[in-house]
Image 1 (cartoon, rainbow, N blue to C red):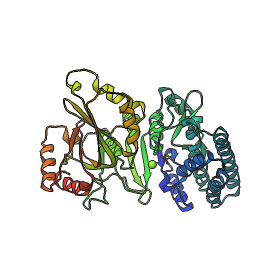
Image 2: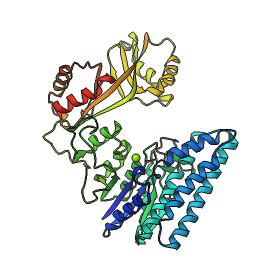
Image 3: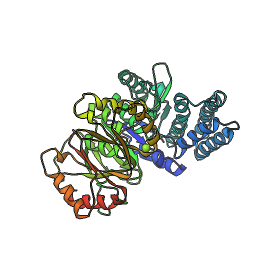
Image 4: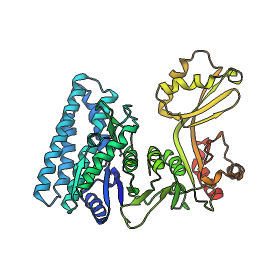
Length: 453
Ligand code: ASP
Ligand code: MG
């Protein structure tokens, strides 16, 4: 049995957390294990801060670095075995020297390219892998820490939002199986890989889940476990909906959709690699290690529930482009979306009519989007932006057969006096998305949860 276990930053903070994680891993004595780690809690944000500071005339590099180093060395202070402690300390110092060089480079160049930012950001995982391996070895679990690029995790070279490439699979398998054969647990950095020239590229924030998916798929693991401080996916945010329940089973498609809406349980990119190999993904809580939280598999078990979850997204705006040309001329949509894509703006939701298209984007991207669309000159008749909106989505495989979900959705919202501004149903037919006023969101989620989940 080969298991890939991913530990996120929110559960890697104190020495107690690290001992607990080491205990969980060690307890699985009959399995071969690859442990994928995120940076310790807060470290990625600090690294980004350090990078920004390095751009200033008088950077706070020393302060950032001494804090980061102090934090990791302090944890190593809890290691009982003096040899393990000393060896790990040397490794931390080596990584810190690498970070200082990278920050110095940013400072002297006076420029933080996407490539430089990616390099700087990865030190969190490089440091945490050393610390996690130290705690494992200290618990008597023979372990070795490796960095993803050394383990053959090749990417396409798109800084900040890289994807893995086909070449990675065989490389990872070769490198990691070799280490596992030595009867060692492998602790590997999440969040990044390298392109074929050896440039370090990140997968985007929260990307360690994706690393874990890639590694699980490459190794043909029996399961991928995502360890968290929550039990798993819920039918709605329990903070908003009192009656929200833990979802014991989800399909890959459902998990991908819910993850996309920022449930922060798993990064949606994680699913593609494991889906290809049919590897089950299990969300587990460090406080109840004996229990499986949510299990995500291909099995499209027909549940009695048509809708599994209500998700939502705020902090968005809707952009509407109206053009009479759309009705008669092919390619207008492509024309509109091309500059948006070029500006690197992610689109969440699209709804079209014969002569207009509306789409939602992050509200922080408003100016960029407006500039991008202005570049189209007079290709449209009207451009408008709506703020103060929210996206709410009903998700579930059960929507596929023709069940009258839409009627129930509109009925439930109408009863609460909530106006639906736009609607879109994905071609996958497992997601029905609506745009409503942000002020109505909590009421809408509760009404939908009561009516259809
Ligand atoms: N450490 C990275 C982040 O904070 C990656 C991750 O945690 O998955 O985004
Ligand atoms: Mg995460």
